[in-house]
Length: 380
Image (cartoon, rainbow, N blue to C red; front, side, top):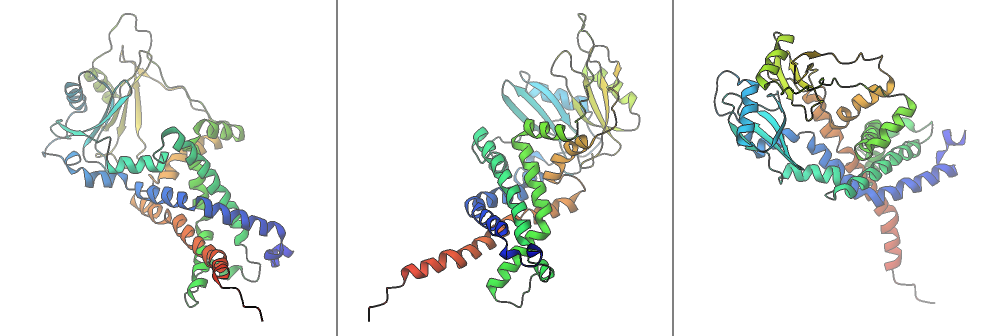
């Protein structure tokens, strides 16, 4: 009963308060940087379009270029590189996107959707790329990714401890949900930290947990699999080559289109091995809507025969979790409303850090500083 009515008197609550306080002081700047960059990256494609207008602006008007013409344009420009696939224009990107590789070198290329001409390569060294590297790897490669994972664990712990120490008692809990703007600035700062933390804790915990996945994907999947088995679906494979050469892209795309009449090619994935299937994905609308559920056609790359994916058993909770990990983290579902919400709410952790730091500074550091700086009283 004492915690419900007088939580400040409970030792465990006081201990968790110290854990929350010092985790925030030590990792606050890190959380500030990661959350601000993450909020900005919700509009990554928009920033790229603003910074590289020539790559995202069609040069002509007219009928849409054939996807095979796009593929051939890429291989003509980069004959010594392997084409991985192409993505048709979407509601967020008005030009074609293609990927090529040569060894460990990868290119992301943009092509005109009408003329199929090459517009250029997304620069490997750019503001957006630097922002991505800062958010995912702290500009430190694999080491930075590991540190980021530890940071996500710490943020999860701060969410849990923050929710416990937020509880002000049964007689005061309603006031802790709002900010009383009539009070002095210190009280407003306290109310802001308490209210913003309460209303955003579920989202912050979601971002922290999904952030752990991006840093430790194997461990994350293994943990989810223990809680609820993850269904492993075998991707269709091409049959034995038997001395045959792969069919032309034209023949394969035409065959795929016969399997999806009235739909538009949204993506083509070229197999990277003799066993891989040729994949064409279709959208009922053009340009491809953001987050659209695409219809997939798998073809044997040597015979052109349609390959049927293995029957998918009933989805488990683990399947649902893994399906939603990435979309929930980056906010690429639900259109612009979700993206704006993720941008605004993603700034809650920086606000919590600033308000928490102000409380710590005014209550702890400043008081001690004043006491130390005061001259000793003269002896009477």
